[in-house]
Length: 477
Image (tube, rainbow, N blue to C red; front, side, top):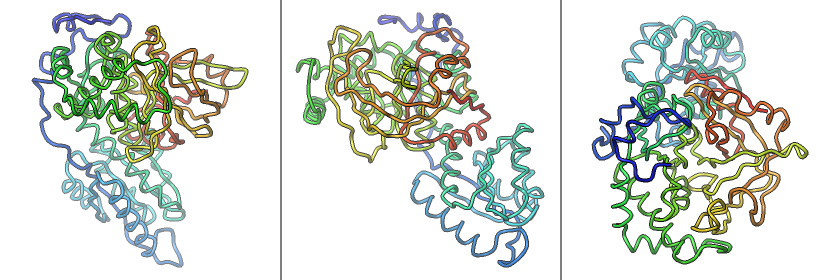
């Protein structure tokens, strides 16, 4: 923790404990000095139908009716997602593909639709040569080209294969493809110090590998936002949290008011800086001014990932999944009960809207922070028992740890550990515990401990994401 560090002290910090700020280019990346270059654009995706439609009663290929159904489903997905723009064309040669790519722009990933047998292998070279992320969608019997997609991937190209008769897979393809251009438009605010793997803590490597900008926030700037927080907004935040709570246990009115003020200030900071995500490395040092845990929960409910303890690996995980499936993540500590084949996840901040921005809020209690004598104000969120979850963490900017489970228990009132808790049944808790964090090259406790939980089974989407972003999936458990 570094409550009173100056900018120079931040610059000079070393890599101990998972910290990597020495040598980072913060001199040109402070929030007040690094405004967003341009507004967010829709993620443009180039859709290429490869080859000529085939007769509906013979041959290997897709017929006119199938192509029309694919086009209709793409149009529905484009409208439903809202933040993608499709440039759709047909190609029968490498030259026609190159023309479509030029029209789509240099940052557009590609969705290629198998239409005619062996047409894709003839027309796809410009996509591969350009190194663009490529998703291949292949209906059954639409051609043999599907079998080359894994070979292209093994050759080092960023290629994902979706071979299915389910047209909903087209929306999955668009969701995963849009992550790449959306990350290039992502702006991350960081209150140093950063924690996590060395790669994730380097703003230059994050920019190079994922495309996102990481800018640091001066504590003095945020102190001013807390002091100047709009009183009407603070009172509304107090009312929202207190009126929505099932019960208020430890927090006093002052605790709630201070936490609500920090929440309002965080929202103002994100709006002022046009940020897409936030990580705070000094959150435990904020406690005298007000606990940030309500603010973290509120931001995640708004679709703005927020990571405590400066965990950049967890923050980047939340960002990837937010862009991909429009869901917030519950970042938490892990602990096992192998006698029940169970893995617990617990933390003192958690989103209420695990179903997304437009979803309902989960029930919650207002509690004191469990690790500082029960003082302050944090949410204890009671998530749905029986819900399938995905647990994930991107480490080193290249390995995506992932597993699934099912929530089997949520306490009525947490005792040991952090306040929000879920107990999940997993495939093999003993093996999972024995191999825990073996893929993480760090001895930092929080880096080893944290995982991010999302509602739903997203393993297949995670595999496609890894293929398209040149990552390696590591299935835990």
